[in-house]
Length: 65
Image 1 (cartoon, rainbow, N blue to C red):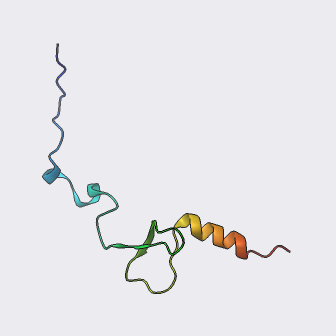
Image 2 (cartoon, helix red, strand yellow; image 1 turned 120 degrees about the horizontal axis):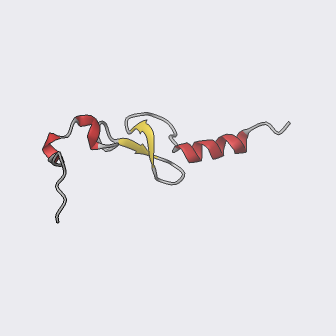
């Protein structure tokens, strides 16, 4: 026997703006190291890195001692 869900799935037009995912909002800048999207808007000046490349750069430039 086919199962019927108590509530139908929402149509794409029924979704709230928050439910559209990370693509919503201003365009994101690409990382200068690997090209992945960053947390920063594309309009941000200067060098932008994704969280992974930012962490790696901090490790490279950390004082060893």
